[in-house]
Image 1 (cartoon, rainbow, N blue to C red):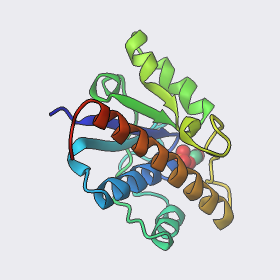
Image 2 (cartoon, rainbow, N blue to C red):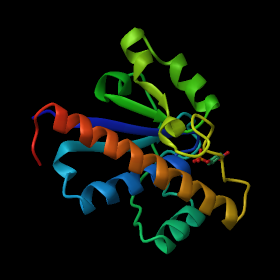
Image 3 (cartoon, protein in one colour):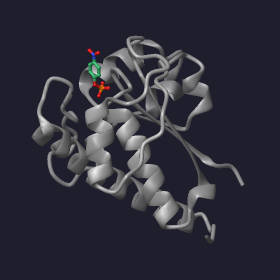
Length: 165
Ligand code: 4NP
């Protein structure tokens, strides 16, 4: 069975998108559906290639019971063929990601992360880089809600397609 290939994208790939990746991985592990997904994250910028997530993101995730293990990577043209869904954190990421698309199929893969949020649907996931712990916790809460709804949506569709897990 083909896995659903999911890529989370932000600017630096050290705060928001590695956290989205870690929370989503935590959720699929908890539900025993890891085998259905391939999950990664990257950034539109090249500032933090090879870097670990921001220490504040790691600490915040840990406080919320989520482990992060990631090395920064930059979004590239090949990702639009390699992944089925590319979830961007904000409008600026969206614009930068769309610049790399080569066709209409690539274009439709780019989706705002908060399309799946129940509060502030479709809005940006705010960049916490210059913020405080409160801002990091707000990002965690947003991503926790959004990835939960995203996962439920995926699982509902898998069920409709007749897959049992
Ligand atoms: P992220 O946050 O896009 O959520 O990883 C940022 C990380 C680094 C920078 C900006 C935003 N930076 O300017 O280095």
